[in-house]
Length: 598
Image (tube, rainbow, N blue to C red; front, side, top):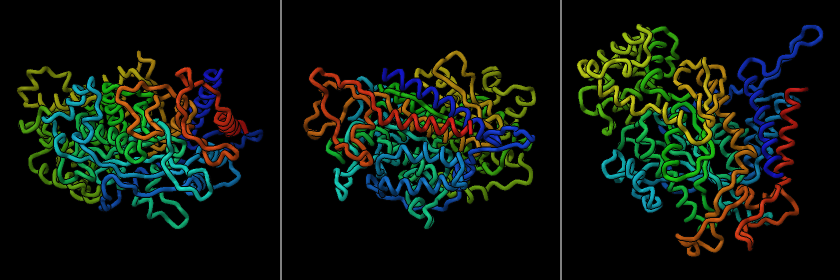
């Protein structure tokens, strides 16, 4: 009975959400011809979210907070106030159904306060956390021969739910229980990454608004439902900027820098709570733009390490680095259809494939993507995490094609342009290997092919939702490989520019991770109210129903707060229907219906 009701509600919510988001991608979310031919328009204006994707790139250098420390916190009421400000911006009409809908899906789920922590760790700090049967996988990216794997420290952000001790003036503490994890992979950036975002949020306006930290605020909603969110910074950022090169689109760079942060989050929260709180190895992942590619990579490696991947939501990602992602982009620049505001991305990809990341086949083999003249300048700027506006000053142009000839090796550029003129968008595969060797291009082609995630995506053994816009002027829609033949995969086609589509894709993933479909996924009990000393390495794990309701929220008056109890005498926790959650989901569904019907 429980499973059937949940599936029906989830299916209905997803169906109506698809309609809403599809409609929100056009100028009117719902256009109905009145009797006199009058059009009535209704839409979700996600401009503020689109703008936040762009504005966060404008920041100058930000202070780097201390490692493994609490940066700040918000009570549930403070979070509601902050989110209310966001809702008022998206839907300024207080009587509109848009505002009613947003309040239902963004405010109503908030149950707990949140804490924001900055994490720092390296491969050496988490090796003991890796199960014996996964050591071989771990060593493929954290072994002694891997770039950045020895004595390097990476950073990230973690948001966890908090509650009180049951009294009005009770002490705030991290919510006890085993929490599902959600790993958020950030979009393309040169300097501003998640573990530096809290200082921007603290500088919010007097009315509580702060567009630049909007993504952080929205993720706070998800954490407030009783889940832990983890945000890796990637290689070459924040804690190890100036020490390591950035590995833009390089799969192993994400594995080396992000897996330690994810594993460390589990250790760190156990240390903070004496094991009263644990983060499960049952997780979901999400990301947009570069974050879409890195989320796929991290999901794949965590799956190989034995983790349970519930779902991956990605959008606008450069998935086909071996083919259309590069060639279609060059074609668009030549045709004047690329948004040159994003030209700093050429610097990121160029430096990554120009003898910086030593584990690539073309490293110091005379097959760099960048010209020898521009390479030292760009490598220095990007390695130092120079803010994007300053990087762009070194990339002047009169015509868009000037950028291609300024940055890229002439032989490589001619190779790509000639292939595109013939209608071939996969020149590295379409050109015989002997010819590639003769032209001294075989190693750079191999480097791109090894970081293409098409096959990884097409063969995913877990649910993956891909969101992309045919109008994307930065990452070509052709970067999405054929998704047919795998029932785990779905394609969410939206419209608008890269940032406009990003707002829709990010909003869609947010709704999924707030849904009953994700919240009700069972996890294994890994916490202990008796302290860490009571946990045996060989103790059997016990199944739990919905860990995010391990403690009743303070808002549920008349219900005693309690930590998750040990399994019943039968050795298995009984499955009960959470009518409070189901009633809340029904209310959200009703609002969704009214959004379209009325």
